[in-house]
Length: 264
Ligand code: IPD
Ligand code: CA
Ligand code: CA
Image (tube, rainbow, N blue to C red; front, side, top):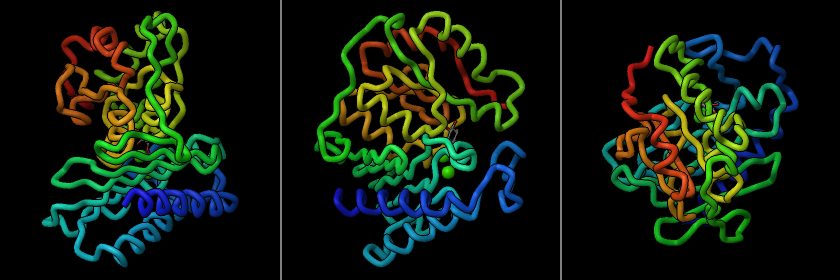
């Protein structure tokens, strides 16, 4: 199964990269979703259809939850959670940090996961109880503590969704005062894989969707990291999400004391 999901993520990512040359941020065929800042391209849809087609061939009865096509066969205990291009805003601006993210969930829990970044040619993968890998080599979260020596990532989908208040900016400002460096790479799936590989020490974001994180969270956990909502409980991603190398988790949670999702 891991081989199948890795091959699918790689081929999806390669298809996205091949279609990118026909796309520019000014292209008229870039569609707006809920807000003008939330966009989708023909490539997002084509990559998702390609992946769904391959899954159907092999597992016709399984459920599918794709970002662009929504849910299919929801009664099945198995569900493939797909984000064909995670980081479309990076993709249309020809930046490197976008990825194809696929997870196979059993009764709502990710059991197999793969995230492929074609520009970096990095394929992250994990299966429950089997560890995490990058391009076939085992990966582990990094092992150092102080925030002042840490690189921390985040994202601002809350702003893209129009959250004028209760958004991520105040948290960003406070954490940026203490962390060694802040990073906004632009693909939540890849951000999580960077935590798993020890390239980031922690990552948090408000307002993420299941397809953004279904694969990356299993990869973090299998690499020895920790995942929680912003209150330290399990209501992620609804109540925000924090991923860390474990050593930094409690320190990071201090910044979100009293956080409760209030949205727009
Ligand atoms: C987005 C990326 C981004 C994150 C947004 C996501 P999309 O995914 O993961 O890093 O900040 O919340 O929606 O929309 O490009 O698939
Ligand atoms: Ca996407
Ligand atoms: Ca996404």
